[in-house]
Amino acid sequence: MRTVQKEWSSPVTAGIALVVGGVALAAAAAASYADPAATVFLAVAAVGVLVAGVVMLIRRPRLALSAGPTLTVRTLTGRIVLTLDDVERVSTLRTRRLAAHSRQLMIDLPDDRLLVFGRWDLGADPRAVADELADAGFRVEER
Image (cartoon, rainbow, N blue to C red; front, side, top):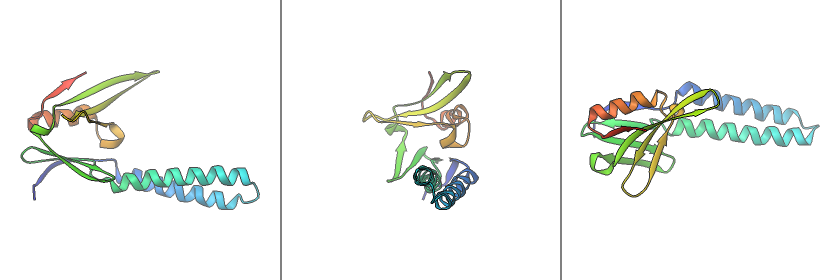
């Protein structure tokens, strides 16, 4: 088993808050039985928020850097283990929407797959994660 040098994932408290919010929405849906439209809308919202919270808690850690260097990406279907040879490049993309700037970490794989992580996925600034990956030996580009 490889020793993990660094892990990135969404905060546990955010996942728990989503689950609690989903339960609260489900309770509100049950309490609004007199209004069928409200019951349906609240139930759909409850399911969506619950699923988002459970998925967030299941996919922990989202990205892990181990000795070697090896990257482990956690997905709903399992784990993807990547070595230096498996990664074509790691890049960060800065985008601007309205007045807000955001940044994503992108990992290009040779089989034309692209793994994209935002601040929400990593629980950290994607640029800082890219710097850590560059220090580990991965080729990092800025877009």
